[in-house]
Image 1 (cartoon, rainbow, N blue to C red):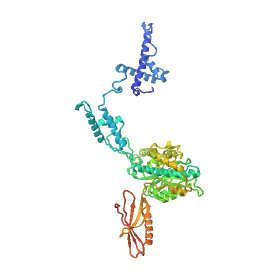
Image 2: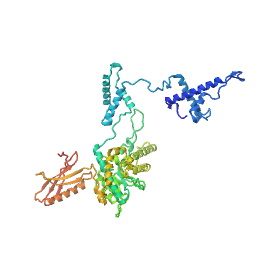
Image 3: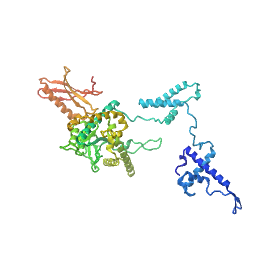
Image 4: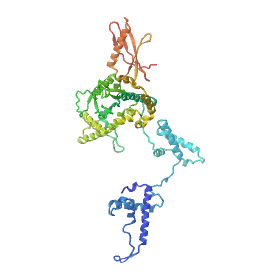
Length: 586
């Protein structure tokens, strides 16, 4: 049997019935045209019947695979039974095209819907609110709007509809409408931290920076530079804690697992490279702790570090860069590569840029809020990697529970590294194709623009093509230093000003510009303050102490005023740090 009886549509069953009926008519004619013969065993004249019945003949015509089958074949017998059911249904229901009054209905049959124009008007209003305006549309508001549309429709009718015959816009009516038009009730799962215009600006700046470097490589060395994407992926020792589980209805859901381990963060540093020789370098792990008492046995080739909170700090990032392939050559920059990072505070440190350049990598920082558009680690890798890792972790939990039902299962750090490394090997990504999909590595002549995602092409396609045409007509930089200077700083990095203001005259005496990052605390802040003190000693020579107001101005929507006290004396300069206070700046 190629199909079960229930799987046939009404049209298919109707055609099968016609074939069986045709064979039945031919069978009856054949029996009517035969002459009676004497049967010695029965001792009477009987009409001979064909060796094979009309149902079996019809089955052999319907199913070519059963034409040579024997009559006692299991599939053949099931097909004959199905054909007999079709014949019985035709006898029971004489309505053409309807096979069973109980299970099947003709197209357009059944009770007709009331106020069909209202259903269509509700769908058009839904498209306006969700499609164009992107507004939130709760169930009750939509139900109220449907009632309003129905009342307007009633007023337009020529004859008044009795109240008992009027439509009731109930929850069931709305549910049926949602099922008919393919609408579901869901929570928002996609949010943007930027306006569309700002997002477009940051995407353009990033793509332009990459194009400038690629154009210099193509003009100078006649080759495409290798592009490497690095990104941190958060991981927890109980990653499956937020996954749903099958359970009985209306019972409390309990799972034996260590929930607190789901808050113990680890970080995996993943890299994807357009280098065909090494497209996916081994991931690196960073666990929470100091690494003094914790002993780990990582898989071969995997590096491990420790940090107080399980997140990358400057020293961890510098060690990771030290593990990278050395592309530096003092005589030529031909083998240099572009290294792409997001605007995480550690990546903004000058030490990171210098360390990468020493290893032969040109750093390009993407602006905040656009990693979900152009960071291939996020768009093509991490969701697949985490999905496979969760499956392996869930299987490990099951095996641990089966081995010791009394113990709460929990993966060790070694098991975490083994599972993620195994998932890494099973995940196959083509970084070059992913980079082209994100508008980063496409051919400069535009022949590979069709590989760009529709989302990016609609957002920045025309602007990138115009800039690329202008870039190809310009004179390329002569040295790598000029190329690095042409890279525009990323959008979204908070810039601030350090201003010295006289407490009496309230006049600005000195101003410095710098970047505000999370690491700028303790040592960096103290160094900066000491520089300010030395400069003030050169600017002012007074016998009495001079109290100066140090203002830290943020060029953001939420400015913060940090007050310090800087005491200068002729004998010994001292630094007094007061508690920071948040105040609005006008």
